[in-house]
Image: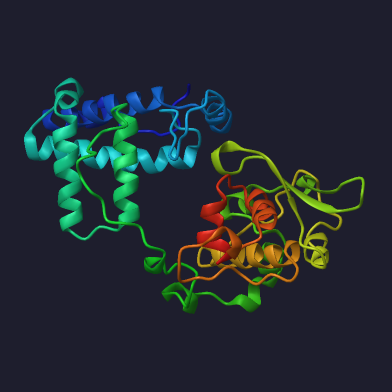
Amino acid sequence: MKNIFPFPTEGDSFFFGFSISLRISWVRESIERLDQRMAIGESRREAKQALRATGERIWTFSTGKVHSYKTRTTYQEHTLRFVNWVRDTYHIKRLADLDARSNELASTYLKQHIDAGKSPYTLQAERSALRLFFANRALAQEVTLPRRERATITRSRGPASTDKHFQPANWQHVIQFLQATGLRRQELHDLHVQDIYQDHAGALLVHVANGKGGRQREVPVFPGREAAVLSVLNGRDPQAHVFDRIPKNLDVHSYRRAFAQDLYRLYAPGWGLPPAERRLKRTDYHRAAAERVTWALGHNRIDVVLRHYIR
């Protein structure tokens, strides 16, 4: 597989001395190991279903591979920070030596980050990255990570500091499109004119070619908001991107969340949104409606969508 996550070459380090060359070799060896964990195009969902078919009950699941480029980028950042910390702190310069002490050092690393007040979400991502890197699902299991609480999530639940740098009036065509489709930022960036079409029944759909985990899906345009989608298509080249620019301060997630809530209300007439402040019971929400919203958003887990979008 061609490496799309570049790193400096040893030639680049010639003028900076032998210690830099060692660091680059260390980085290169780490990245090559991550390359071996890539499984773009392979279905994580199918692997999970195959395991369930054996009768094994599972809550969390990993194939030991990386199925999306975004996950790869995140895991690579966490992994390289760790291996460079190991080199600087313990003067270990070979992966083989690090492998022998991986559990001990990963545990120490995570404990330091817990003491430093790192976010529970960051800590979970760090441990997941290291578990994949060392191919050890039990790595640092003796370290108790702080619980991830919904109450600590502030993204898109109120005014953000970046809001003052964004003028909504100048971007209504993008905002209305998001309100009609609920796409992720990268999905919006990658969308082409030809990806928007009508099915045989006349319903307007958006084809997402590369969503979360590399999965494709068809997103229903919210009924009554079709004009916002059709208005960006008139007379345009089918191969053209729908949007040439998406402002970096546009809070895409907030519109995605609003789309999810509106779609849930549409699919569950007579139901309100699930209660926000306590553990959900099965009778608190409309299961079929939550499933349809989950699929439209490109997720697999209803509990994630209920917790972070619909509530």
